[in-house]
Image (tube, rainbow, N blue to C red; front, top):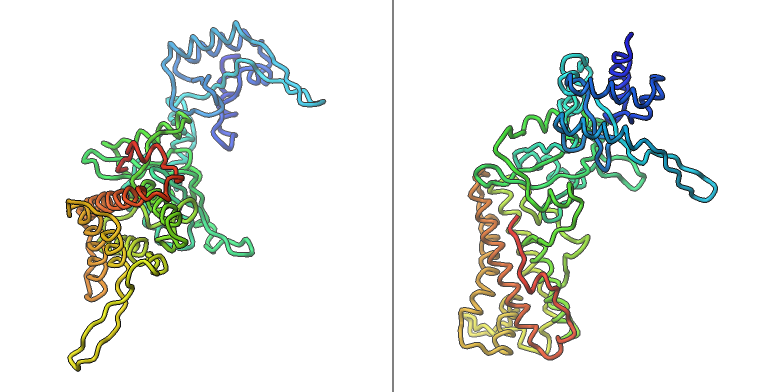
Amino acid sequence: MTDKEKILNEVCDFFIASNDFNGIPITTLAEKTGIEYSETIDILKELTKDGLVSNQDTINPHIIGLGHYKTEYQLSVLEKAKENKTKKIDSIGEINIVFDSHLICVYPSEKHLQKTRDTSSFSQKPYSKKLALGEAQLKPVFFEIEVLDKYFKDPRYSFEFQDYSGQISCDYDENEQPLLEKEEDQIFLKTFGLGVDKNLERVAVVYLRYLSGLTSEHQLYWKSKEIKSGCQMLEEYYVNTIEGNWTSSYSIFSAFIAEHNLINEISKSISKESLFNKTFEKGNRPKEFTFFFMPTLENYHKFISLLDKMLSDNISRKFFKDKIELFELIELETGQVERKNKGTLRLLEEWIRQNYNHPDDKLFDDIFKPIRKVRKERQSPAHKINNNIYDKKFNKKQTDLLKELYKSLKLLRMILQQHPESKEIEIPKWLEEGKIKIF
């Protein structure tokens, strides 16, 4: 066996034996083959020109992160490695750690793997197979948004979502036993994100690395919902997950919850009681409060119901005690008079109009019409049977309504903010500047 064959075989064997599709460091390769380091690099250059191997010199060269580099760049990397072969020693207490100061890992090329690797063990794992054939671990794969419904609706899964990304995992009981009995369903998807297709409709995006961690049953399920082309991920998800940076963008969902919470803080500074019984910041955000669902009439009605519970149903009657009359007197046909509770939304509007004079009645319409619209739409499915239908128009209806409600809450917060007792409440800069996006 020639040295060239020995090195190529070692590169392939290391990659195939690896549990995480890792490359072999050049220094390790030289030690395992017994070939001098400088000569190993010369042979790697030949193999690179032949299109048989590839190298990575990124922050994490142990995986093929974003893809394979052009041959010219790989050759320049190898030449620099030849010049910069050094060992660095760091000490932690009495422990000495030796590592390469210029770490480069080598992989078999996609062309060579396609030609030589037996992938029969990956026949039911299409995404693991892609990594086994040398594709990039951080390659984005796009899916119809309804791929998430399976996990979103099943209470045995923990479905978490914030702004433009989320996570899915199997839930466990109080004895740390999985709620899903079948082992193949006990999955964990570390991260998924939001993207758009060519028509700017929402799609889900997952990196190949995390799809590969799914069981065969779930890989095949996701494969059935895959979109082959015409999609791109949101910039925010790319910046956060690939570049590792925080973004300055906030979703309308986060803005809605922030305004809702501020209203409560301000109202409590005005009165001993807060306006809303419950707020939804941090871990209290309902999982249904998201754009990640299939556009059906049933899901839309569930979203409407949630909004009504967060707003009208959530207004505290205690807040209005001793501020305005909580009841109205209604004369019955019998001549008797009945004392009836005023609705919470009516109480809020009466109190606002009583304490805030504004010449344009449109301001009050902008605040209260959207909230009343939600209440009215919630009552519709409660009194009649509707056949569930799939229609992408529900995406737009949801977006338009949420925009109206966000404006409603912001106007209400700005009115309450003018009260002298609310001066100590700090308004986040991002809310004031209005850097809000409809993801």
